[in-house]
Length: 191
Image 1 (tube, rainbow, N blue to C red):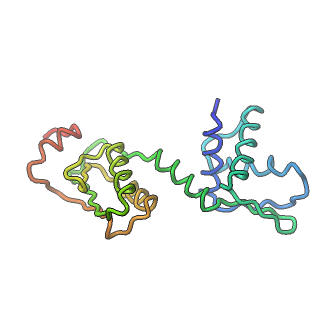
Image 2: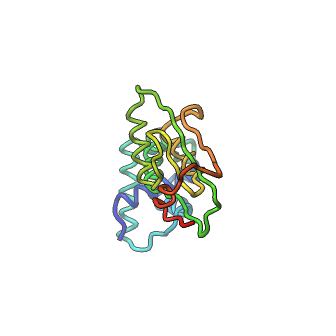
Image 3: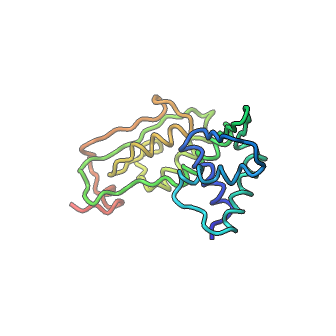
């Protein structure tokens, strides 16, 4: 059985991936049961049991009440979209699920992430370091992290989430790192 957090996350992701919903013929007080199939179309699973359906309805109203989604009525149409805060919350969910895919065979290239974030944004810097560690990158220096796997998309996601500019965070691909035995050992690379 899915938790309320799962339901909330699914609704936010459904809205994020599909953009704005337009629901026609808003004359019935039961418009939400018409909305859910459209939202669920953009997520991985469908609601099968009545209890789960009720949980999604409660989550939907919770999101509206907390200001994460915006519902506007124009004539007989309803527009449902994420608010700025809703997008921020969805971004947090997306960051929590980030994972760097490990190919079967290493392509003999190192990916390096370097960053230079000002002291006034120390919280962002420390949060980024924590996430890089969680993703399994190797810390070569305080602001230089290495991985043998392609992580461009994941790092772009982190850059966007933390609101960093290209001059603050850069990705480098290198074919060789001097004395890389310890790094190879960290990633379980032989040879």
